[in-house]
Amino acid sequence: VGKLALQLVYYRGHECRASKWASSGEQLARVMNRIDCQSGTTQIERVLNHVLRESAGVQGVIFIGDALEEPLKVLADMAGQLGRQGVPLFMFQEGRDKHVRNAYRLLSLRSGGSYFVRWARILAGAEPAL
Image (cartoon, rainbow, N blue to C red; front, side, top):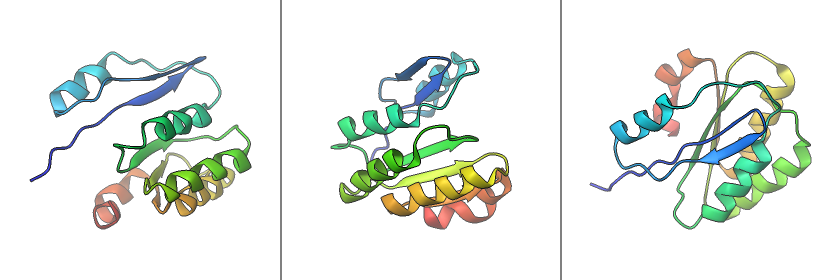
C-alpha cells in the first residue's frame, strides 16, 4: 500500500501559504486547526502557480471554494498545463453561483479532473472519481 502525503495550500486576506507535507491525518488536522478565515479576493492563480512548481510529486489537487474573481483564461491555461503534467484538479464548489460553476467545471475539464457541487455529492458521488 502506498503512502499518502498531503499539503494544505490556502489563501486569506492578502496572504497565500502552503503547509509542510503531512503524512498523517493528525499532522494535517494540526495545520488546519491553526487557520482562521479572513475576507479577501480569490488567489487561485497563486495556488496553481504553487502546484506547478511542486508538480513533480503531486498526483492531484482538491480545491474547495465558492468564488472566482480572477481572469478565467489565465486559470484555464494553468489548468491545462497541470493536465499535461498529469495533475488533475478536483474542484468542489460551495454555493450555487453559475459563473463559479462554469469556471470550476472548465478548470476541471482542462486538467483532466472532476467538478463537484454541494457537500451531499461528496458522499454520494465523489469516491469513484477520486
